[in-house]
Image (cartoon, rainbow over the protein chains, first blue to last red):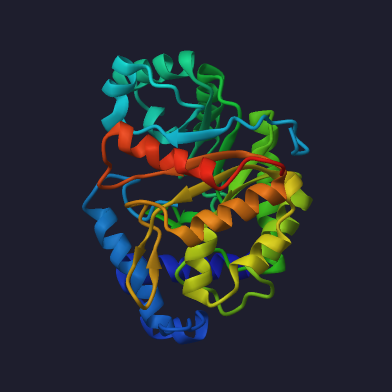
Length: 61
Length: 276
């Protein structure tokens, strides 16, 4: 699962530490109204909230 | 019963939330069933489990988790799974569900339900893990379609195809969240009816509905507020395609009184019923 592992390690580092954000346009697709980096930022904001509150209160599903 | 697992249609239920414990204990309201958040009753003792015992003695319950991380490339957490099975046995839960997602990697938890890349590699990986989890639980696992805000560039199939093939290859059940279908459809620009048309409904054992928060450029699956009409209509379509199936309302923030929350859940009955 090397490809999946690489994807998850990059995504987690981008969300949690803000690292390698410049790779977002290559690794993620743009949406109808938001670019790849803006879409990634939805998760980064969610992680910021989760870090300061109790799980599982953010991003319910 | 219309699903292949023989799991019952429990009717229209509510997500059990701590702010409603006292009212439920006091009023003993007529509710078809409750869904409990598994992790609220794990690694704990005392009051939460006392409340759970009280509710489970009076109502049918099903378990819904957020920490299985079935898509992660980290090893499965065997201790978590053992506790999950023990909770299922204690509560008499009719089924156990979690999400088609991953929550962390390298031992670090993001505290979020993160999207999978929909690839053949990921499909094989998740299917093998679902089979392992089902072996440990001794029962089918129901996986819920997530709400997502990004799509991975390397994906080779849409989510609905991934979900259908996963369910077939792992022989697992599906918890179909029609609000998540609506949210992801808006965020990614697909037709929610295309999604529903591809779902193998003989594997669907439960439907979720919920409110969400519209930000113009995207929708967040916030579980705040009442369900909007287009989501109720997706529920009606899914329920009809399933031939009748358990329905549950999730409301997780700015939660109103028990009576108001239950009334919102019961609105589902305006959209389901009759001849499936």
